[in-house]
Amino acid sequence: MGNGPLDSVQLDIEFSDDADADRAEHMSQQLRAELAELGLARVTARQTDAPPGARGGGVDWSTLMMSLNASGGAITMVLAIVKGWLGRNRLAHGVELKVNGVSIHVTAATTQQQEEMIQAFLRKLDNGEPAPGKGN
Image 1 (cartoon, helix red, strand yellow):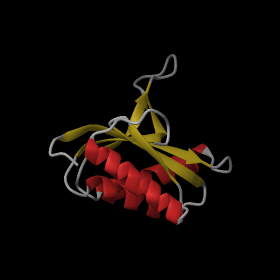
Image 2: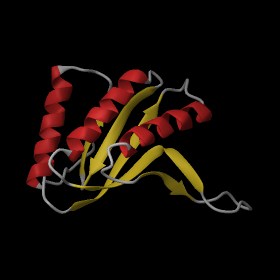
Image 3: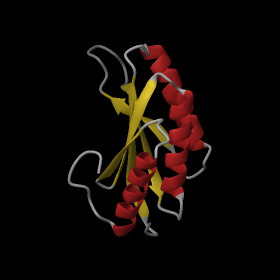
């Protein structure tokens, strides 16, 4: 990856229908805390507009945002944390990670195909190639 900062990293979390809002928020907060422990970036939930009559904005815990310096293995570490988190949270089906127009859908599966997709994703980031569509 390059030496400059990545403008943003977005993680869209897909929860099972069995995950109520409180449980989904708790799981997202766990993932946020694990990512923050890397010390690579500030991790926040996406801010939303406040409902009419409410003060301040809301928080969308199904989307986490990071600004990340593209040091050697930063994205690789983020992917490892996401995969580990998915393996421990059966109510989370997957996470779509988006970086500079390149995205990958990560699941708890530990298949060879998933690893190949991750390696292709990292090569695209290294080459600065934007992805034309979802999941590339």
